[in-house]
Length: 299
Image (cartoon, rainbow, N blue to C red; front, top):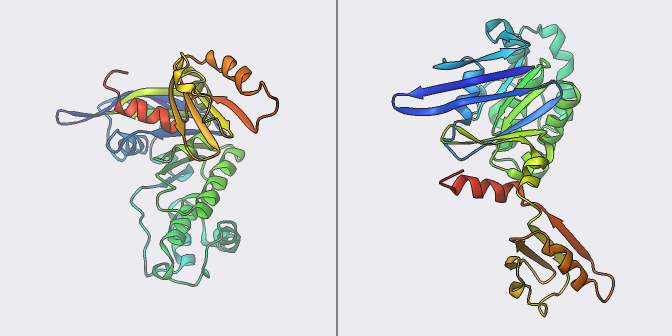
């Protein structure tokens, strides 16, 4: 288990991380979100002991994390760092050896790893010949090939197309199944919402959201109502409790509710003639909540 207790990191007069605390149980995924400069990468560097905290501590299984734990950690930095003139095989063997694995142990596994991540290239190809997306997958394999128990991924989805992003998501889910502790940062709220058990949102180093993803969404109330069909004649905007009517296309209308209870009345109204294609009352999406909190002056 990873435990972070009241971490504080200052750079001069600027507080990058302000009394941050959380824990990650084995087999659990934590999403760390926030605007650029919120303190996400600094948090990762503090956990990894790349920089020293001014206050607080980081524990792994009850002990201060340190050099003795490095071989059970997998870290994918935001700044990708592969050696372009090495072959894929040489690159993966090199990183595995840095984590205490032998070439004899790792070499037979490389083809399976390349197949699992659908890397377009042979293990004898130089890294510099690969596309950016395939280089990113090779670096992820290098992060995971020693089967770490603590995995830290800084913006792992950055620059990936939808197919490769799904491969990345599948890999993270498999880490949960392997009972690893996983923490990753992302600006894509859909990815966080789909695969995280818990999330923390930072703003200027401070924690402004923390907890179970669905529970956080529910805490904002079921204030979004999705209707499929033509409701242009209903004039929902005149109903008390309806804050905004958003017509996204010819078939989808989204009502923003100031009073979620009005949903019951709307349901009776739109179903008075029978079947309708969709009536779905939901909390705000994580992306909407992110925009609310990132733009708010007072949490």
